[in-house]
Each structure stands twice: as C-alpha cells, then as structure tokens.
Image 1 (cartoon, helix red, strand yellow):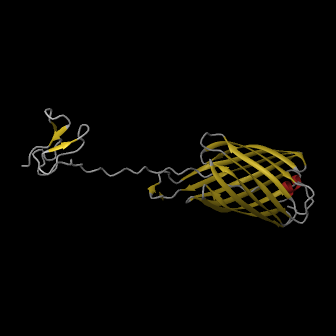
Image 2 (cartoon, helix red, strand yellow):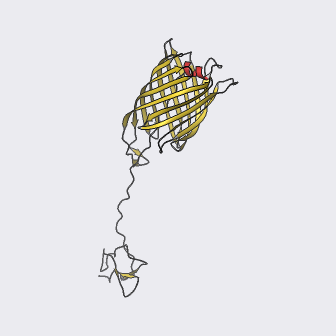
Image 3 (tube, one colour):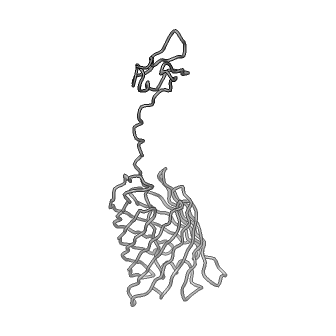
Length: 282
C-alpha cells in the first residue's frame, strides 16, 4: 500500500424496508513493503435499533494486478451478533476490478425479544460476496455483484463518483442489495478519503490504499406468538330470584351458583320469547 490512509463515510436510506443511517470509518497502515493492516468501524441505526461493530484486514497487494488477504469482523444489532472470518481477493484488469470475500459467519440470536421467546437458533454458515467494477473514468466507478449472506441470495449494484476541485477528496456513492421479496436495501451518501495525496484518482485510491469495509446482513428475528391463558367460565346475570335472564340471542354463559341449573346453559322458555331461564333458587 502507498502509506497510512483512511476514509470515513455516512449514508442513509432503507434497509429491509426500515429506515437506516450508518457511519463507517477505516484506517490502514503499511507493514513493511509487503503487507498492510486495516481496521474498520461502523455505528448507526436500523429500524430504530443501534447497530455497531468493526473488522480487521491483513493483506498483501500489487497495485498493478491483485490483492490477497484475510478478514475478521463482529457486528451487533437488535441483540443479534454476527462473527465473520474470511479470505478476500481483488484482481485488477485495466479498467475492471474483480473482487471477492468468502468465509464463515456465525449468527448469535438472543433468547428473548420484547418478552417473547425467539425461535431462531444460533447458526453458522458459509457467506460470500463477488463484485465486478468498471471505471468509466478514473473518478467514476459502477459495479454489480452477488451476495450469499444469512442463507439468502441477493444481487447488488453500486456507483461512486469522486468530486473534483475540492480541497479534501470527497465522493458520492449509492448501493443496493436486492433479490428476495422479503429483503431489499438501497442507501446513498458521501465518503471522505484521508491520505497524503489529495489529488489521487478514485481508481488509484481503490487499488493502492484501503480495501472495502464490509457490513453483514442481519436476519429477521422470529418470535413465538403469545397464547392467551384459557378463560374461566362466564356466568349469566340473573334477577334477584335467580329466575330468568333476558338476552338478545342464544346465551354464551352458564347459570350462576344457587340456581337450579348451576353451571349449565340456561334453557329457552318458549312461552316467553327471548327469555332464558336458570330456574328458581334451589
């Protein structure tokens, strides 16, 4: 890598049909001439719940041809924790960049949510990202890709444009994940690059400086439905002599204690329409 550098970004939009705002930051340091180390951090809100976490990359790269590295991270949201360990790679082919991240993620679910039992079980699975990016100009990138995360397949698309004429390098970006009917996200924002060369192009920053910062996709919590406790019997209201009850329809109650039909359904007195009787007191 070219030297110490970093980036910070803020973005907002919709994640899984919920409002979201996320800030991320990365700091990269060279380890000699061969390796680089990058630390990522993220904090934000999704559907009103705080999301946070971070990751670590150890990588080697030749800016003219490739990047190879290992990646680990932990993020949490809505009491769900996701651990990841993976390998990452990038291949540079003139104006194309092919990139991939593949490894293992472990999802740790809470036992209770809002006082209800959570039906999801802790689970570990393979996950992967594959992207193809093309630089229309040195400062304008478009990309498309595929995600297999949280046991679901998603397509992805994105774009980033590095503004010119600014004292601090700033880019505008947008990205989206989509595919299954019950999950889609689209966010956009701005990114500030921090390095010793403020004139460096976007393609050079992506190939000479810090790797991509990755965030997991959080699954939905499935809660056990609460079941009302069985209701006790409802007793009819009768007159002071326990003699009769007047209803607008068939009774859905039982005769009270002390009547001839105690704990039984009142009978229909056909001689007095609309009156259901429990009988005289015993």
